[in-house]
Amino acid sequence: MSDIIEKLSQNRDLSDDEFRTLITSDDPILAKELSAHADAVRRENYGTAVFLRALIEMSNCCVNNCLYCGIRRGNIGLERYRLSPEDILMCCEVAYQLGLRTFVLQGGDDATFTDSYMCALIAKIRTRFPDCAITLSIGERSYESYKRMRDAGADRYLLRHEAADEELYSRLHPSEMSLENRKNCLRSLKKLGYQTGAGFMVGAPFQTADHLIADLRFLQEIQPEMIGIGPFIPHRSTVFANENKGSLALTLKMIGIIRLMFPKALIPATTALASSDPSGRELGLKTGANVVMPNVSPLSVRKQYDLYDNKLSSGEEASEGLESLYKKITEAGYTVSQERGDALKDPEIEAVRFKRNPYV
Ligand code: 5AD
Image (cartoon, rainbow, N blue to C red; front, side):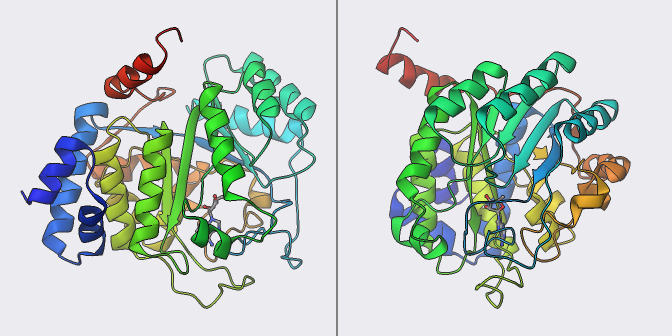
């Protein structure tokens, strides 16, 4: 095995220079080795299990204006929708019948989702589906708000940091948004005991290897239980309409690196990865990913959750294609898990936490 991958596996870390070498290398043999090693580490920790999450896209209304995103508030051509709490409960019911045990309530940063609205919804889902995990993904909120929703029964929270480097963040977001606030949201979520998900896009406009290294360093600070990354894919009604999409090879490489750095992390083979290449999902799974998130939103709204062009919302990415998804997962050499799929605790990270504060 090459020294650099040996070292990354041993230390779960590299110097910036070494990361740069690995990220910028276009040697296919190195990429293959990385992938094989990431797969071995995933098997050591999670066996062949692939965890499924029912993705419910609650609303495409968003107060934010992220330059790359198709549901940004400035996209006036998009028809907006918001599922009612009854619709959402119905989606949970459908997902439960299909055997899914995690519901991901994802949406734009929608002002309708006040704390009382969310807490009432979470409490209902909690009561009706006591054996399921509730994951939220509804953007930046205050510590108090995250706390209320946690107390109401939410278990997990996904909030991609998007770009940990200040300069890159400011080129991808309007000036009213702040990287420090986003990072602080993730720190709050961790503190409140959410299984926390961070992440970023690969191949975003202006992104360099050093920006990706900054993302890895930020992940080391946060130690998220879940890490979601996917290729950037342009959306026709954004300023980045004519930019190149992120490469499959680089996205896979970042998934492999992240698996070696965070052996216990839950890493999805994202919809963006599946959308960007017909084998994207399976290649992601073979490079360390261990989660897939089929869409269970009502068919009538699927096309409107339009983050980027040609986003898959049917076939294996959706509840109707579940059988076919199972088949593909099995054919790739993995096993569909029927469990909630909580993150395993990482003994090394726990030891550091204990040293800092043995009383929690
Ligand atoms: N390409 C790929 N991913 C995107 N996202 C938003 N826009 C795009 C795009 N154009 C991702 C962001 C966000 C998540 C909801 O979707 O990382 O966190």
